[in-house]
Image (cartoon, rainbow, N blue to C red; front, side):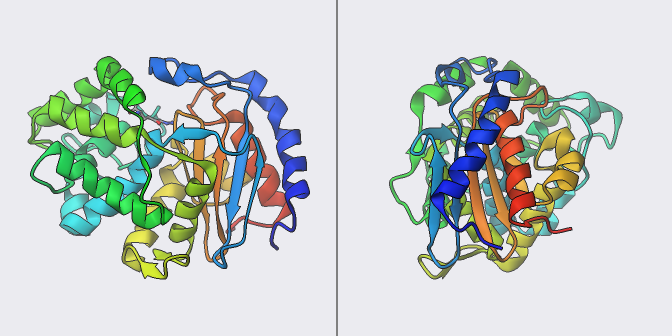
Length: 309
Ligand code: DON
C-alpha cells in the first residue's frame, strides 16, 4: 500500500506531534539545543520519483548517528566486509549508544557493532584518504550520490560544538587506541567524526537516501548503483538489529522497518523494495530517539502495512 496524498500524511503528523512534549532535544551537544523541539516533519520518497512531505517541511537537520550507516557502507566498500568485521562486531548491545562498558567487559578490543559510538568511531577510522579533508570529501561525495544533490555539506557550528564537547567519544577512542582497534591520531579522528555527524539536509534528502537503501543500493533518480547490493543488505540488517540503539527490538515489533536514528531527532528509514522515509522531530526519548518521530513511523507502518514481518 502506498501513501496516497499529502493531506493523509499531514493528518498523521498532526496526531504524532503532541508526543514531542514528552521529550526534549539533546543537550550534550550545545548547538543541537537551538531547534524548536515541537517541530515535526516527514518525507516519503518512492522509486518512481513520487514524493510527499508533510509537517514543518524544509527544516534542516544534522545526520548525527544516521551518518553511521553511510560510513559503514563506505568503509565496507573501502576495505571489504572481512576487514571491517574483524575489527567491529555484528551484535546488538542492549546498552546506551555511548556506553563504554562492553569495550572492557565483553569481547575485549572489539566494539560490538557499527551503530554504537565506539563501533562507529572505529568505522570512521577505516575511511580511506590522505587527509581529514579528503576523507570527509569522500563521505560527502557518497552522500551526493545517495541524495542526487551535490550541495549537501556539513554544519560547521554543530561540528565544532560536538568537537569541543565530545569527552566521552574521546575516551572511547583512547580505549580503542590502547587495544589497537584505532591507529590514528584521536583529535584528527574526532574532527572527521564530528564533521560527519554534522552533515546537514532536509527530510526529503533523508528519504531519498532511505530509498537507495530500500532499492538495494540503486539510486532510481540518477539510475546509478551507488553501492553493491550486498553492502546495502548488510547496512539494512544493522538498521533492523541495532539502528534504534537499545530500543531496536521494540521498534522492530512496533514498526518493522530498517531505520537509523540520530540525536538531532532525525530518522532515516528504508522500506525494502518500496520507499525511503525521512523524519525529523528534535524532542528525544531517554534512549536518544525522536519521540514524535517514533510515533509517526508506528502510525505510518500500521496505516500503509510497511512492516517487513
Ligand atoms: O557521537 C555522538 O555523540 C553524536 N554525534 C551522534 C550520536 C547519536 O546521534 C546517537 N543517536 N541517537
